[in-house]
Length: 427
Length: 175
Picture 1 (cartoon, rainbow over the protein chains, first blue to last red):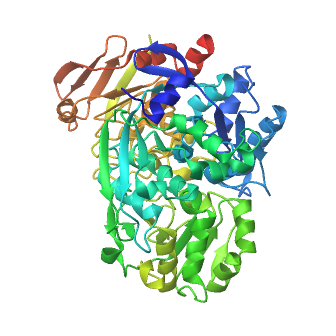
Picture 2 (cartoon, rainbow over the protein chains, first blue to last red):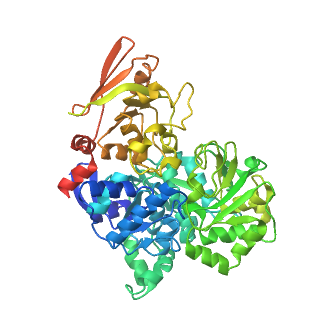
Picture 3 (cartoon, one colour):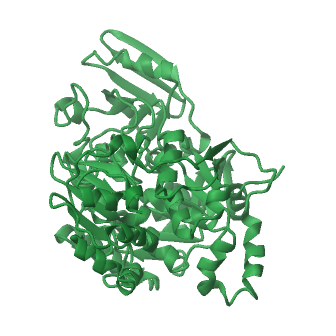
């Protein structure tokens, strides 16, 4: 019997199996941000164990609230900053170099096929797009990861999702993943890895694959996973070119992590997306999804473009394509947060930022900010946001506020009309 | 051995997420104790008052499916811990929340829908209370003059974490 990607990664990283069904894995990349790490640091200090297992395998960024908005967030940033300096963590990203962790760390080439990755952040599943096992964990798991470089898991089964057909015009990775979550429901993948494949995924950019994997957690999934291929190698090439004679050699090496043809899945779901329409959530759970046809016309107060789901360059490009030469509705506040400084710079160079600003958008620095209602675009009671983010929980973007999850294209169209709108007529 | 349970707080809905358990705006606190006043602050349920004595006097939570979905924030188990709640009993949990509970040396117990219904039959009793014996995998509920006990399943690893007082102590002695 063949193995899935997740099974191969578990087998290659197994450190201990203290009880049947519990696997303690060695971790290749331990990622830290300023919200969930400081309490781990404080606990390690209180225990007299202020150490790190490997300062090269630990990556840290201040991203959730940056620049700090008050004394408390300044203290959190300082705790992470002081700790990173104390332990000589080279890959630490502060003001000027910082961005949304799940966009920044892939951009730096930190995640490679076959890696194990943990972070005190539920959207860590994003990094599975590189053929890695990447799981969000709590502060205690993070603390042990920092100290010992290990993490315990129940070995997850794998749900294979084949995205078949071709995505129609105006329909993107975000629509595809909302469709998948609608299919699986919010806990349909609990204790499961979601492996994305099929012709649509094969043809996707790494950015789009990250959008897919990013929302695996919204179906309860432990990690998203895409098989590493030529697209993966092209993305990673600036970081791996010294290690391989050719891209073909890299593809050949990384392909060993792909699931075997006879791998055993918990479930295989085939979805033909050739007739998919742009989608939009309607309630307070990410599996409450409807076609934009049914949702169009509902007014929005704010349009937010950014986050680890959809704050990457290709997201900005498609939104700018729709916004070019147009103004957003006077009743709408448009906010764009490019996910990383590099994305911001590229967007400036391509003239995208000019388009957003001319359309009436406020462009902020890279940060998680508004997505979780911590800064940079918090909603007032009763307000509604059309958002490219990943969670529509009640109050997520501010107490009493409502969020509709949708693609960057649908967000841009909605900004123009001041209400939920179909992007297809603008493309 | 540490005592698990206490007065029961019944939260009759599935998919209660971590934003409802502890809103993100309080994630700027850097000690667990500082989270204390914000327990379940944004949870909206018929008849549920987050600020009531019932909520703050609880020692165990009984709820439905997929409890603790959403964010990885360990602030969710912590806000229970600092308020004296060290057991959550549900039909199912989101993975990260469940692991966080055990990692903190607390118990996240899964029961069948039938057994959860059975526990909810005590929701009307003002004195409903639950006592959990982790070592023997049994729980007892009392209230309104009734009492019953039931077995639950807990993985040997999760039990070991509870008995060790959490994952840091366990891992530190072993790896």
